[in-house]
Amino acid sequence: MNGDAGEFFLPPYLADGSGAQREHNPVYRVYGTLSYQPKRKCWVVKADPVVTELCKRLFPGTETNRRGEARFSAHRRVIGDLNWLMLRYPLVVKEKDMERWREALFQAREYVVMRESALHAPDRISPVPHVFQGKLAGFQEEGLAFLLRSDRCLLADEMGLGKTVQALAMLSHTQGYPVIVIAPAHLLRNWESEIARFLRKPGGGPVAVHTVKGLKPYQLPMADIYLMHYLLLRGWKDTLPQYGFETVIFDEIQELRHSGTEKYSAASLLAQNAQRIVGLSGTPIYNRGAEIWNVVNILDFHFLGDYESFTREWCYGYGNQIVAKPELLGEFLRREGLMLRRVKQDVLKDLPPKRRLVMPIDSDDVTYRKLMQPVAEKLRQLKAEPELNASQRAMMEMEVEQGERQATGIAKAPYVAQFVRALLENGERVLLFAHHHQVMDLYKKELHGFSPAFITGRETTAQKERSVERFMEGRTPLCCISLRAAAGLNLQQATCVVFGELDWSPAVHSQAEDRAHRMGQQDSILCYYLVSQGGSDQDMQDALGLKVSQFVALMGDEPKSQESVFSDAQYVRQYVQRLVERLLEDAG
Image 1 (tube, rainbow, N blue to C red):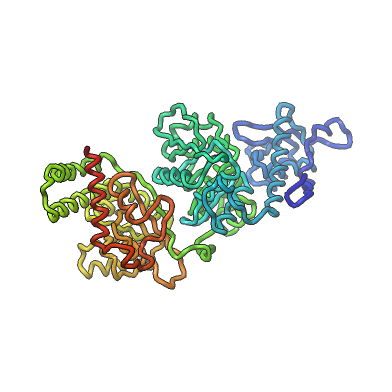
Image 2 (cartoon, rainbow, N blue to C red):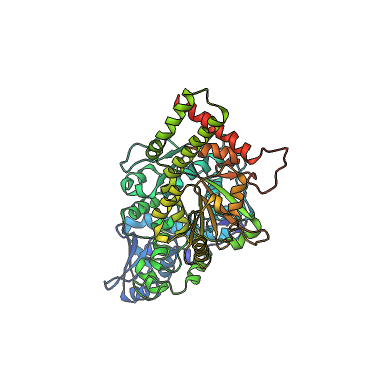
């Protein structure tokens, strides 16, 4: 066989060890039979005790409670071990399973060739021009090369290093449609926007995307990429495998770390029927054996053997969940080409001091409409009283603006909390910024389990100092701060900044970011701007120069000349007037 590096010869243990051609040859002795057991997805050896006893000593997981019988998982790596055993102790493959055995041996050989070729593959690969509408950093090109080397793998980069973008760059090469992306509910909008921004069909047209709705299956429309959140998997368990998805991407695959659920079972069935399986996670689990085994088993069935043998050999004994040597397990997963993991410190030279990401999130439309009823009344007044003087009109417009901003912030607060909860569960230390006290109160309710600190302008000086101390000393991973109360704070223990609400002024956001990042600091701070599709966020995005999935440098990083901008008051006034004009038009 030929690999990328030229002629590559299969190792001897992958020669045909089947005893089928030896059965009637007196030179060879056949020691038993080999058959496939579909229910257990394993190959069963029934042979002389000398053979089955050797199996159970050499290969953990082959043991059964039956004398003269051993079982081998039907994994591409394990087939090589079984074939090696058969070279020494020939077995006759049952006639009904001969074709399956030949296919299994072929896949085992392909797997070895793929691994060997990967050693000589390029360290970096660029995405396909025009199909992928963007540019990757150097470490992301390395991630793309990794994704293209293996059809079953885990990209475990730390949060904020662009796993989604690397996965889309992979699709620009593989064109492995139809694709289904399974992700947490709060990330589906981000996938929609990232696909629209980065990916095109080879002919230049847009990639067709459909987001699956509801637990009850329906006939899916034609699309290239389907999006679904994990909570829907159980309802679609028997339906999804029938669609023949070529590629499955499990975003935040640690959602599948617990087996025994309908969600896990549905994910397993979906993965079995796809050609390429990719897991994305910023939190690979090393120390709890049961969890990492469950995750890897979705990606590549029995890559780590069966659960019992895994816990016996890798953990502190049968059924124990703690991995004895997590660094050894990580090295094995990387060496076998299943996992790539980079943390921020590994790629710091490729990162800007601040990484700004605009993330679309959901909001509660019912809550928004209810809160906008008093605002609608003020709009009617504005429309009905054209004789208002400039001062009165300006005051009423500001009341309208404040009302819509508050309605927007409250309507999206549960989804902001959901996003922040995911960050905290991933081990991040978060500064969460907002403007309205009612919004802060909702954060307090939704995130009370993390015992957040608050600096909202309602605290005494002593309470404010205690909040800073609690965060800086690691007694809480979350500090919620008013956008206009951030001046003078030093909270450099933070790893993420999240804006749950926006301000009109770019300088306010830049100042808030600087609570976590100081000039000269050798770090890269991740700043999330969470925006809803409705309400005031759209107008404020325009004012700040924000675009979903990207961020132009208009956030007060550089001083602005007097010739190029209005004063702050004029600047805000300009956009408030636009907001009111839009609301008046919407009101008809």
